[in-house]
Image (cartoon, rainbow, N blue to C red; front, side, top):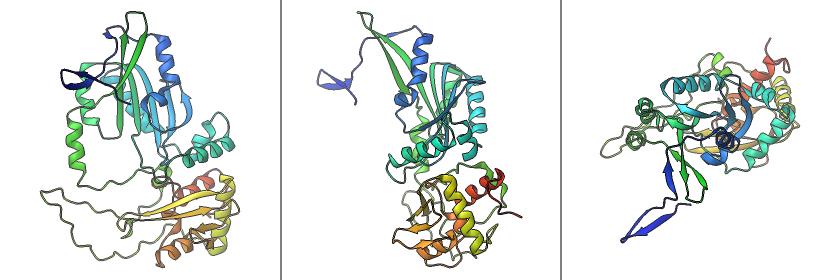
Length: 341
């Protein structure tokens, strides 16, 4: 809630107390760290505080994207580069890595993650990948923050306000430069491609996007015009196709690992169509109309009316989360699944 003061016929943002030049002490920074998710106001699922190099909270947003949250005493050019580097390393973590780091264990990780995701609206878009909360920001780094604004990096600046009776308030303000609004205007004419959670998927050979999954760019001009849709490209060959009985065994192994019924999503960007399905713990993939399949490709073909869809790639755990092929690969790497000879 924003508060405004009525002064001389105008509304101005209300300010309480007076700005203090003092820095936050260690107790205040500890309180900020303990309640950082409340302060930044973003729905994030906390995984673990990692403090070997710098105190940072590894978390996930509703799309399944890894988000790194850091609380710094001072943000300068060196600490900004270091924070981005650490976030890049953590972004490569997969499900098994995050579950292994979860203090309550892998079983609790699956349960708590599903509860968190179900508490949010469906199809929640991905947000920033790095969140930095700093007590002091040096002048040399502020131009860089202007460039990073709107590019997956959110920065919040802390300031101390004091009252005459000794009470103190901590003001948490997002850092946004004049370039932020301009960048958003440019991006309005371009489609974005969401980032997947698991870097392990990059080990597969690149596959050309199918015509209904590709999201073409649109030129931002005085009047927005849409280009005629190009003929559908030849369907790409899936990197791995399992026989029907093997597909059923693989799907069952993934379902058992998840431990409970899990929602899957297939978002066809160009058509603007979203398909939902439920992977039961017993291994059946149930569509919204109640039809059941033990092969994700068969389920994808059924909802799309096509016969050339690789269901392992299109069905995802959240719109920008990992797909079934990622889950299959991770279980195989953990020796919990033997599907690659």
